[in-house]
Amino acid sequence: MSMKRVMDPGASGNDSVVTEFVLLGLTKTPALRPILFVIFLLAYVATVGGNFSILAAILAEPKLHTPMYFFLGNLSLLDVGCISVTVPAMLAHFMSSNRSILYLSCLSQLFFFHLLAGVDCFLLTVMAYDRYLAICQPLTYSTRMSWGIQRALAGMSCVFSFTNALTQTVAVSTLNFCGPNVINHFYCDLPQLFELSCSSIQLNEQLLFVAAAFMGVAPLVFITVSYGHVVAAVLQIRSVEGRKKAFSTCGSHLTVVGIFYGTGVFSYMRLGSGEASDKDKGIGILNTVISPMLNPVIYSLRNPDVQGALRRVFTGRQPPT
Image (cartoon, rainbow, N blue to C red; front, top):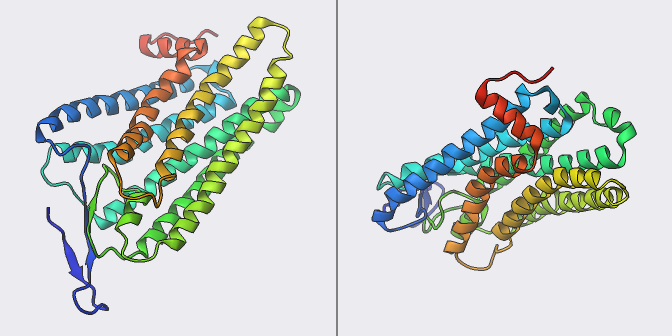
């Protein structure tokens, strides 16, 4: 494989700087590439179509103009963005013998992936807070989750995630890449770039640790505490139907949280554990492809309001007044 390098004017001897990386992708077998192309193209179309369908249903159905569905609509947009950061480039590599990605393109992919995944993380936390207020504090729910507060929470999620994504990307840009430029993955991410660095990654690992605590551990603790209160409140509901309805709305969210955090933990817990393996690619597919594709199914599967809105969107019927 080719390895483009340029001489560093400030370096001596044979030191050079990598200007592009080579993504090995999912397979080295040429015969499998067309098959994988079709599979992931269908997955991409299904994800984009499913998430935009959820968004259309939320916009078209007045009954869904509530805080929970406002955040769900934003989550659908994030899922489309997240899969669009990785899969189109992977599809292009399936159909080409050139698997290189420019250094700046690699950093851009890294930035947008962490930006969108970060907002996703915060929005899942906000949705847990929304369920806590709706079930445990119903009398003050409308004031504590007003339209202005909804926008503020979504905006803060974007600001926090942007700050983290920019910090991680700038920190990676300070690393020297002078050796092998082959990434055993289908997209650029921190663990794979750390392995290729010729300079110390101590600062980068510290920044990632802080980000994991702030954007991973803290939100997960908040979600757990919120749902602890929710479960306690739901168990006090005397009506079986009422308990079932409350748990059904929370169950979808908890399923998405489990998939999101489960894949995230496995993606980054292996830092410093050696070379990348095919397991990382499997986790990457689950994180960037399967999870965004399943989210619309999970949220609509046991939700009659969403199902009714989707039927009206596809049939062109007007919502009941």
